[in-house]
Length: 172
Image 1 (tube, rainbow, N blue to C red):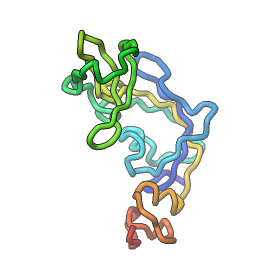
Image 2 (image 1 turned 180 degrees about the vertical axis):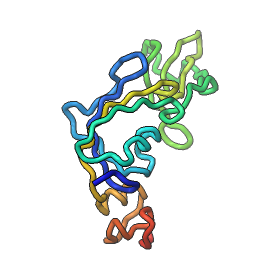
Image 3 (image 1 turned 120 degrees about the vertical axis):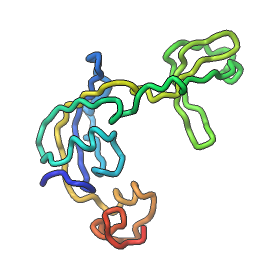
Image 4 (image 1 turned 90 degrees about the horizontal axis):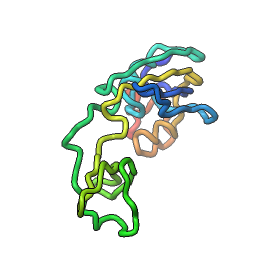
């Protein structure tokens, strides 16, 4: 079975950055599972996997524009030092999660300057070229539950092939 849009895909992978550093891997873990074409993985990987088959191995290098985007200077902000615990020794590279108006927001400390902390709200991999070494571990029709998870709705017993996200008629 070849990978097509809306099929469930499981992959084993190693992610290497442009400087050769291994940033992530499924080594010793279950495969990463997602439904192709639904935005659950970065665009470049989602596109590269189309047409591949179970057991197939491949490598793909993905530019920032099809990964986590370019590094945006405007994503750096000053945060009052008083917003952090007084006893906390802040260091460049430390990561935090804050509650923003639309939910959790991740940022990294760039530096502490007196009474402000310079923070970077770019994704940690923004601006980086990524290389994935991939092995396709699973290809199949998604379950009703897997489809419900991406639509955020209950499927009321619809068959996956009937679901709205797949082009069918369920009201999900």
